[in-house]
Structure formats: C-alpha cells, structure tokens
Length: 418
Image (tube, rainbow, N blue to C red; front, side):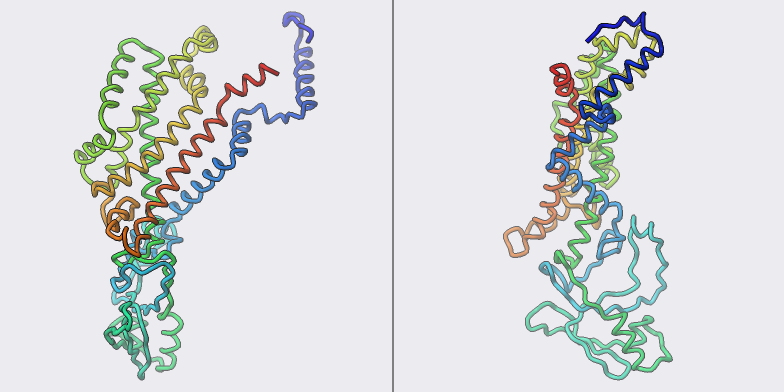
C-alpha cells in the first residue's frame, strides 16, 4: 500500500482513508460489529457447542434457583413438608391426599415472598388408601404403603375438613361432599420420589441448587475483589508490598484448602452465611497469584509506558488498560473457583458444618441418605450427587469456552499473518 505521511493529510483526507478502510472491510465480507471484542468473543463462544450448552444449563439452574418456591411442588419453607407415611417412596409414586383445613388462620403470602422464603400450607396433608361417606362424615383408611395396607381408620366431619375442627356449616351433606371432592381430595405425584422424612425429592433438589449457586457466587465475588486488588497492586508496584503479598500467598497456599475452610467455619460458627466468608477467604489466593504474574508481564509493555507518559493515574492504568487485557484469564479462574466453591460447600454440608437442617443442600442430602447407596433406594444419594456433578462440570466447560473465546493473541497472530 502507498505510504502517506500524517503531516500531509488533512481532516478530510483522514476521513476518506477511514471510509476506504470501511469499504475494504465490507468487500472482505467482514461485518463492522466484528471490530467489537465482545461481539467477536460471543461469536467464537457460540461455535463451541459444548460450552454453549453448558452455559444454557447454568442459566436454567439459575432460573430455577431464583424462582424457587414459586415453581416447586412443595412450596413450604425449605421444602420441608414431612409426611412420614410416605418415607422413601420410589419416583413416580402417586398418593391420594386429604387436605384438612388448619384451625388457625394462615396469612396470605405475596408472590415475591413466596418465591424467596416459601409459604406455610393452609392444610394438613393426610395420605389416604380408601375412603367413604357416611352422612356428613368421611371415613378414611389411612395410607401405610404396606401390602396389604391395613391402615388405621379415622373419621372426619365434612365441615371440619373444609373449615377446620370445631366448625359447622349450613350446607347440605351433598353440597359438602361435592366441595370436599373438588377441593380437599387430590392425587399428589412425586416425580422423583420421597426421602426418609417423606419430603418431595424434586422440591428439595430445586431448592438445593439455590444454596450451591449462592455460596459459589458470593465466594467468587469475595475472592475476585481481594485477589484482583492484591495481585494487581503487588505486580504493578513491586517492592516491599509485592514481597509481603508473595509471602502471604505462599503461606496460605501451603495450607490444605479444606482444612483452612473448616478452621474458618469453626471459628465463625456453623451456618449458611458463614460458608460465604469461609470459602471466599480461601479462594483469593489463585486469583491474586495469577493476576500478579499477568500484571508483571504487562507493566513493561509500550502502551503502559505511553499511559504513564500521558500522565494517567495508576488506578486508570490498572483498571482500564491492564485488567481488560487479562479478562480471559480472570474469567477462567473465576469459573474454576465457582465450581470449587460449590464442591467445598457440598463437602462442608456433608460433614455437618455447612448449611444446617432443614435447609436443603445437596451435600447434606447425600450425607443423610448415604445408607441407601447399596439398596433399591440408591437414587436418594445419586440424584443430588448427579446434580452436583453436572453443575460443576458445566462451570468448567463454560470457563474453558470463555478462555478460548477471549484469547486475543491467536486473533492477533492471524491478523499479522494476513
């Protein structure tokens, strides 16, 4: 191409040159939005079908965890509606239920409150084997699950079923029977069966995803904030601060992660919120170590020296010029840390020092049902374990896909070669 001196080109000349370059890109069938790094990265990421599928799977789990009790079959808090007669029933079990109105008034729950914390049921759930009417009474043989059933027989008044015990109704027995059949006798299906306490496994698994994702998200945020600040400043300033950060990384790195998390958890106390802090305070090491190395390699580059010469502040150079160039690396580390945080939370809950019962956690579900692993009810262990495996694998695959999509070095080498 013809060399043009910038001293001989006016404003209109520069405009014409830029216009010619844009026409050249169009002739090469390259859309203008390909100049955007984010659009190019997304285009490359979409070509990775496995990573894209994993990303959509994570989005599905996030949607389930956010909607929570508004879509679970059991909308009580922690999906903890225990029906002991239905203990350890296989997937697909269908049982007739008699809904008996509770004596006290239950406050109506708004949609958003129900979505996040659940709601108290207005009825007692009583599993039935058979029933018949006698006047204004319902004679029930309660469900036991045995063959033959041989359940106890109990009598309820129709007005008691509809309005609670001690109540009466002016309706005729025929009208009461019609109302009971319509509103108070249902067939409940447990798609994934029940656990030892007779709780719906599907609901517990769906709410358990909320625990895993929330712990992973908060832990990754904590690790990124601490790791990026310490790693970036240590790599940029060097000197004594770099020596101190390196020493601290080496000390914490030498400690087993699980033991460190257990120690912090025991110091802060058992509970759901303590897990956030414990896991987050042990994961910043990876972020700080990698960010420090990347910053050291970039701080001597020409564009950094140009920024210093133009009087840019240190924070601007770090956050607007250095960190954007290592976004891919940080993204992969964050995805790996997310998966590791989920595994750590499950391990702590399995050991009994994580989320406490009756909170639904995949780790605690595996621990509570581990005795069934060699029985016909082994699905009680495999279902939460399988969900845990899929979610962790999805984060690893998405991290690898993002790493490839955000790799600008290969893109630059292709442009140079062209």
